[in-house]
Length: 156
Ligand code: MG
Image (tube, rainbow, N blue to C red; front, side, top):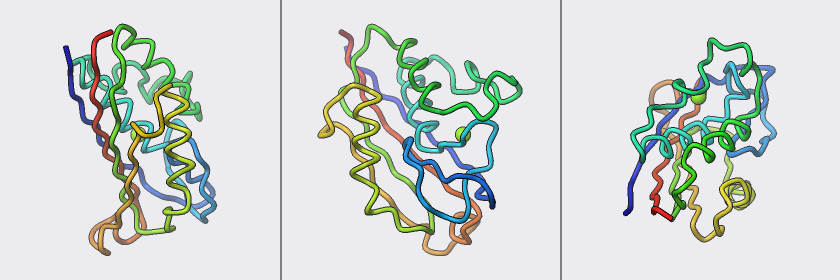
């Protein structure tokens, strides 16, 4: 059996916060405002994994009202999510990052490697694309970063 899931997330970008995308910290003067480390890409992947099995969403398991998740690394939340989908293999993950700046093309390979490692799948099965919002809206003005993810799961 196969199942597909998609996820989306958006975070405000503010000063004095690290910009963490797919577990990689990108040098920049702003970063995600969040209860956790705000890794918008990992959050989108978590929602896609949960969505594929109709298991709810990231807030179901890791509520931002819970002090246990204050400033927690999102990779830890992803590892917990992978336990929830034990019995399923990830066939592939396809992601889109949407942010105006900085340009992250030089970090894409590193982000793919990190996701590949975290999810224990070959890098060829992890796609990460980056786009701008063409100057439109809060992402276009540099006040936010968003991510989308689609995953395909196969029962083991
Ligand atoms: Mg989030």
